[in-house]
Amino acid sequence: MEVVASHLRRLGAIGEAIPARDATDEELERVHSAAYLELVRRETSGLHGARYLSTGDVVVGERSLAVARRAAGGAIAALEAAAQCGEPVFALVRPPGHHAESARGMGFCLFNNVAVAARAFQAQHGGNVLVLDFDYHHGNGTEAVAGEGLSYVSTHAFPAYPGTGTRSYGMPAGAVLNVPLPASGVSTEAFVAIWEWLVREAVRRLKPDAIVVSAGFDYVAGDPVGDLGIDVGAAAGLAAAIDGAAWEFCNGRVAYVLEGGYDIAALVGSIAAIADAADDRLVASSGAELASAPSQVQRDITQISAIFQGGQPRGAN
Image (cartoon, rainbow, N blue to C red):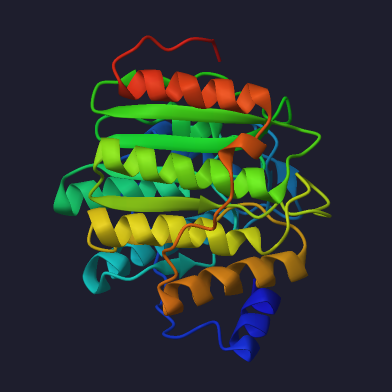
């Protein structure tokens, strides 16, 4: 994160730096159980070296709780700042969070940063929050805590880790909309077109009061953990669609929170593109054609359209 931040500063992509803060137990427990928080505290306290957290595939050390608490608090601070200034804010934090469930850490994630930020916003302002997740991997943890005004929209490689995210459905006070993508990859045009459609329809139908983005860049071609074959420049089209929807429907309240992405050059290029889109207020459509998407993806989009129109969802997680 220090290396990425230094590159972004040199590019002039960081304007105002907003200090992060620690998430409180109360803020974390809006998403995670008190028993899980105590488990993390117990298993990291006084730890010498590294070990796996007992709930799953997360390697932890003595400072993991403090760092994860700061990452969740950084996401809260980003959304708070976006709510105040009406402009996009990016939380450059690690560890990521979208795999963390209420009582289970997994997939590098201890606390679900975007969900914690969303629930903090609701506690302060009320209303509905929409989480948009374009990470290579499905955010199983965010889907698991959706509802009660929190909606979740994701594209992700399938059947890649964690192997979830095949079903879309409406729910009381929210929706979960999943668009699995072939793990072999999709074209950059198709990826941007899918997200332009998803953002436009989800925001128009769900009418969120704020948007939080699980901004994972492991979809970029060459990423050592993901790689959907997508160009780094795709982030500009995603940000233009998201920022434009935020300015039109929820007073510019949008916070991007870093998830995956394990190539420094791709991280820097993608985040810089998002910063440029915000500075230039690039809200025009890219012109990408949804017809370029694979046929299965188009069937999933038809299913989502049916959900918005009151039809019955299909499939199973």
